[in-house]
Length: 94
Image (cartoon, rainbow, N blue to C red; front, side, top):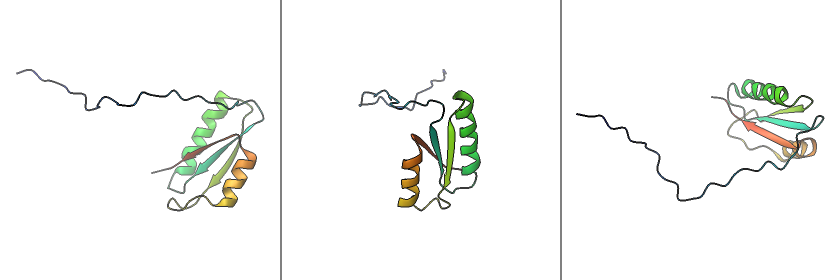
């Protein structure tokens, strides 16, 4: 008896759309890191920040932490992020 392996992924009915990054990450710009408050979310985003600055020296990082994964980011926090950052990475822990 032969063993057959089946790929559980189905065919997509939607044509993939390539992602186009329309911002420029030049030295001196700020990228935000928004932790959601789960354990290790800050540590995870610290590692992401290290990877960003290793690939793009001169990028500035700004950090925020919602403190509670079930809460939404408040208007004050969102205004700060929008005013300071050209991009933001939102992440969570486990």
